[in-house]
Length: 400
Ligand SMILES: Cc1ncc(COP(=O)(O)O)c(C=O)c1O
View (tube, helix red, strand yellow):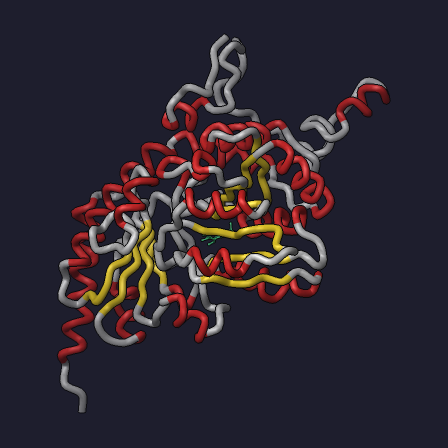
């Protein structure tokens, strides 16, 4: 029998959920655009309850293909799709936590998750202690008898810090906590946290998995027993993925490996260019030698990823002007698509995070975040060069 488990990620991305023994079926995944499924009798009705041939809020065959592909890529038992990345995170946390429980979370995480942990979970009696992302002693000290979950993100948005998977997985195991990581920036091509012992891997599928900025979705992958619990909650909360979006996700994932390799190369070029530019104060990129966790990043990641953040010399106003002077890098939130995008984190992903917390994390008004696409690297560098020149020419104009 042909198997997928020994195959490489490039193959799994294309063929992950394909039954290799099946013949004469459609090559492209069919879209089961249906809310419900017909049965011949009530015994069959009972047999199909909870399967992907019952009612689409519970499951759908197109969604199953997307879920099996992500599970294969992450090297875990199973995965679940959701209507958005935030849907995946909030549902998972609500499935695994109850009133009186406590969470330890990194300080630098996506702004929406920060808001959910600090403003929404307390309404249900669930508290969170935020700890400095790479200070593992702080993580350990924050654990209480009622701590249930360690919430992680790596590389972080937008600071691009890298978390030591081995250390956090060990800490979680010693304290019987569930470890959950947002691996959106990492992608299953560049890193596989489950190999280090992390329990749950989450992706905003909106980003690299979909890869074409044309859908919103989320995925959580992990051990069957955890996925079963999350499935129950997803079914109750109802934030399942639409089958049409699942089809787009499956199609996107077929090119995930080639896109990510190109994005790694392009981002590395862009990061090196920026690090040598006089108008740039600091560059954050895991595969730059100046990155504080460079050695760790090289050890646990195959590539540095497609995200680069940098701080421009000057003011927040200069950062705004620079982002508006770019032509090829399009001014838009989100990331992970084939087109290069630029955004300012204090105005987009971290707008709702209080300014003092942003300062503590290191998100400044001068910070610009780039999502590097698959265009030609020379063109991307030329665009940055032109925009940096335009801003420095303006800075030199005498006022008055
Ligand atoms: C790292 C990260 N995690 C989670 C999310 C939330 O995903 P979604 O927008 O699909 O709900 C985002 C969105 O930007 C993100 O950047």
